[in-house]
Image (cartoon, rainbow, N blue to C red):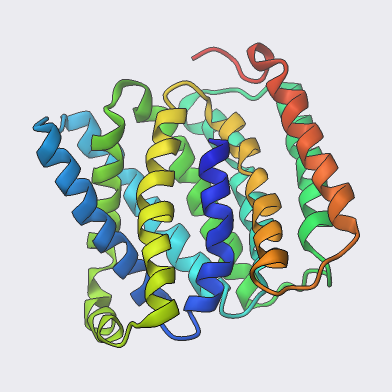
Length: 279
């Protein structure tokens, strides 16, 4: 799960730079259409069928993921990569609450405390110029809530599913949801070249194939609340990429924010048996 958040952390800067040339909906459709082809090839090599449960779980996760990625991309047109990273964690932290209500995974006190500490650290880490409730921030938060529901869907179906099959159905469903924008996506694809094409390649391979597959594998064992907490590492990685690659201004509060996040993750993961009630 940590590796997945590392790969996704870089996508904040990549998406921010990509939406300047490719419309958000076209970018989401292109990356997941290409990823679906990769997953399809993997399933053909495996020669394994997809169960009814994997179809259902993947479809629900795909619909939630479509909302998450689309709203996040729209938000990045109007907000910084750092603010997007903070709001994404703020929304995904609701996975613990959603999982309690929807599938009965009750979060422990230490997990809730860890989420609160990590949220404070994420704010220090990413909100370098404050957070205004503009349209970009609202779109990003809405996308993050969709991601939280996707985490819950994985927690419900991943333990008994084949990770490749579940991730493949999720990716294909997401692509189908975005098909109404195929015209603009095809038009954008014809103009892709140079750095933009390389960015899309990273979004496809790292952000849409490897990272989702790692998440499904992780959620075979981890409850939704702990996965939501581990997502707090994403803004940490996102800010690191924003500072080193994306050219965003460095802030000394980064060190305190990073310390709070790592303390929250280590504090909860050091006592995994207490982080969530048994299924």
